Image 1 (cartoon, rainbow, N blue to C red):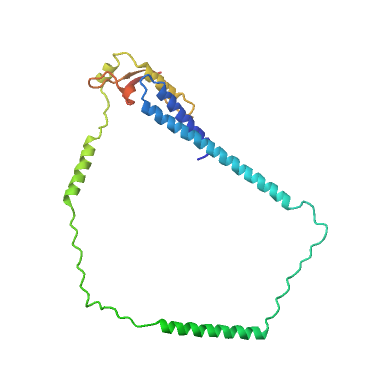
Image 2 (tube, rainbow, N blue to C red):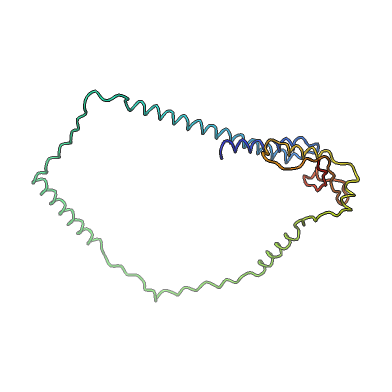
Length: 231
């Protein structure tokens, strides 16, 4: 992650934190979550800046070290290359003694190895009892049925996507007063600096669709369906 990306993500997290904290019916769980995410991004920015400073400092130290080692001017005296002296040839007496020592060591090692060798008798495979084959594993059909039932229950419990409202529902929703808080939240997100290119239209008024037995739960529950009047 680059430093610019970290700053952009931190700004987005700060905007979300301000929106969640400025609501009259704020949810502390969401506020704490946005705050934790924002603080982790700030720590990440500090770590990236420290890493960049450390690399720049290491490069500058290496550059100064190279300037100190290599002189800028030519040497005053020519350099002479000297070849190392060849080693003296081994004497004949030492070579004969080394060969005799090696032969004596090999003979002693072979003699010790022959004494350690011996015959051992092991039971044959026919005298041992035959091992019983493992029982066949039978698939447990009950577990598969339970898994299928659980999957089907999870699919049935999932919320169904709402369809398009008809004209009567739209007219009924627009009969009441418009929700100014939803307009303020929408415009705050649309005009935020973290959105570089936004083609979202400007909204003048918004009406939330009422649900069964409730006048409006979108702002409190963070989920809503509304009709908007575009400027």
